[in-house]
Structures are given as structure tokens and as C-alpha cells.
Length: 234
Ligand code: F6R
Image 1 (cartoon, rainbow, N blue to C red):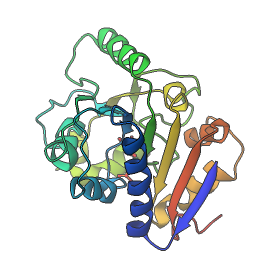
Image 2: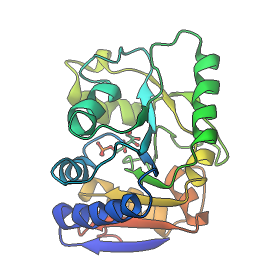
Image 3: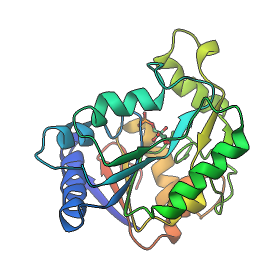
Image 4: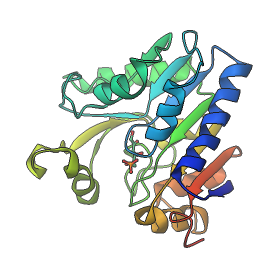
């Protein structure tokens, strides 16, 4: 993996934006794997303010909480509509359906979508514990889409968005690490001091299921895009 360190989140996000634009300019039917969370917000803002046209492109999101309706303000459906799709509609945008009672059916549906739309560029954030998507520590590196239990540390990190910790969903549907690794290109973004340990373990540590993002060491075309704080232990 290649590591690029920028002065701050703004400069790093600009690099990611230019990279994203180039992929779309080369292929207006490109498939983009998208993440939610605070990390890609500047990238999405840049995309919204650009003159790029995504009307032929496809997006596939990494994950969705299980048990939240898509119009819940904390759902990832809601997040993506607010932060990108309202302004920049894609030809097709896929997210896991967190309301589907038949989980097995939903997992199969999502795996088929990923199989039929190979991802050209995958955007990733990283959890404080090294998770990518909602692939928590000990997730197998060859995993496909599945229902996962969120770890206490992830539930705790997410509680800032809810009225109380009891409201934070305890499960999510997540694209697996195996599917993420099939993306042609990957940009992993991380900003801020609370990501520095996870980044050190991802880049310098052994490739091990205790740090899900370390799986990216085996991917041929991954760029890790950092601000100085996230890079401070490298
Ligand atoms: C979100 C996702 C998660 C986040 C990670 C970092 O779709 O897949 O892996 O990327 O939890 O979240 P933030 O960016 O809020 O620090």
C-alpha cells in the first residue's frame, strides 16, 4: 500500500476528490464503493460542489445499520441522500436494506449486486479499532456481505449521533473484507489523532484479523490518505 500524508484533512480530501474525478472522467459508468461517517464528508462536499455528472455511474455502499428504517436520520441511507445523492444522483445507488426481516435474502441480494457491479474505486474510512465497513476485529479476510454484531468500542464511538447509547443499533449489514479486496482501487482515508493507532497497526503491523484494515496490505492498488495527526505514529 502507498501512504500519502497531507497537512490537514482539507488537503487530503482534495487529493481524494481529484483521484475520484479522474476515475469518473476515464469511465462515466464507473462503480464507486462508498462509505459514510465523518471521514468522507469533505470529499462528498467537494463532489457536490463540482460539475461532475454521476448520472451514468453506480454507487454501492459498504454498510447499513440493521433495524433502522431508511428515513431514520441516523441511517446510512439518510446520510448518503443528505450528503451526496440529493445533489449528485447516480444512475443506481445501492445500500443494504436494514429493514429486511429475511436477512439471508438481503445478504444474497447484496452479494449479487457486488458481483454484477465490480467496484472500480472503493472509498474507506477506518474505525478506532481498525474496522473497515463494519468488519470488526476477527472478521475473516475472505468474508462476504453479512450481519455483524458491532463491538462495544464501535457502539461507544457511534453514541454521539444518538440520544442515548441504548438507541445505538447493535447490529449492521456490512460488505465483507473479501469483497472490499476485490475492488480495483481503494482509497483509505483517516484523519485525527484518535485514528493514529489504527493506522500504525494497518500500515506497519502484521497482517492479522485483529486489525481488519491490515488486510489491505495484500491489495495491489491501495492508497492510504492521512492528515499529519493520523500519520503521527508512522
Ligand atoms: C461507514 C464505515 C465505517 C467508518 C468508520 C470511521 O460506512 O464503513 O467503517 O468508515 O467507522 O468512521 P468516521 O469516519 O465517522 O470516523
